[in-house]
Image 1 (cartoon, rainbow, N blue to C red):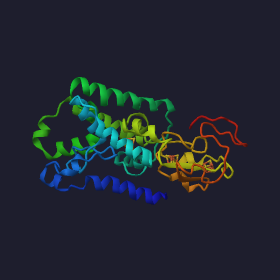
Image 2 (image 1 turned 120 degrees about the vertical axis):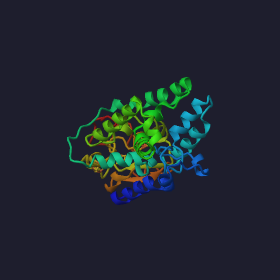
Image 3 (image 1 turned 60 degrees about the horizontal axis):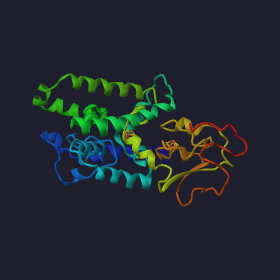
Image 4 (image 1 turned 180 degrees about the vertical axis):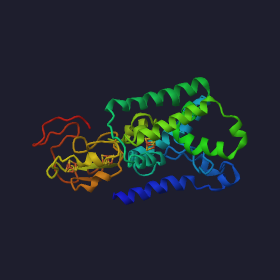
Length: 289
Ligand code: SF4
Ligand code: SF4
Ligand code: SF4
């Protein structure tokens, strides 16, 4: 997918799920039938213009009410089994915001791969266990996307909401500012280290219908794919990396292309293992990234 095409998709992913403009004009929430649809994006349902519900909000709602979140898990499973993490790479508004912020001229740093494990702690702790015990949506209370498109608009529009500001609001603002700032220096820090949706969707990457294919015969190991990758993956070393967003930016290189689970070697080149490069010319057994 070309750079411009992905940006257009990301723009649509930000605008279309938030197109209930009336919500801002009347300071109200959309309550129609679409609100029961769980979108595969981190997009706060409390935004005045939001049409759909957030999958993480849905999971928490079921935990708070003491029910198994079949609906949220089922929706995420169907989407994950089909396109893998492509919704993260091409549609999610908070991923888009982080991609844009990284364009700023700033000191650039890498974060260690092990930071990805925080996402699982956030998922288990803040989305499942703590909401179940406390009957409160703790991830949503702290979510920076919720603060950006839900909390801030409401505080700006509604004097009653403003009067209810407590210390927690300033904690949320601090977290939002932290991720906005770090996103100028680190590629998608929230997606890679914190997002609970980013903990669920990688479970499907290796088995999803859409797959990435790599050609060891033509790859020169130049590493340019990692430089343009929004999550710092080096697909020539592990093209089935679970963290791959299927954004397809790297398919600008002719040695990589989108394929399907039924045609995992679209270049017709057998003998390469995604777990570590085994083809002649690179015996480094390099790590996944
Ligand atoms: S991992 Fe990133 S892109 Fe994916 S849902 Fe979370 S915030 Fe959005
Ligand atoms: S896949 Fe393409 S961009 Fe990546 S290392 Fe190989 S030749 Fe370079
Ligand atoms: S490996 Fe390629 S498709 Fe996957 S996230 Fe990186 S650039 Fe996008």
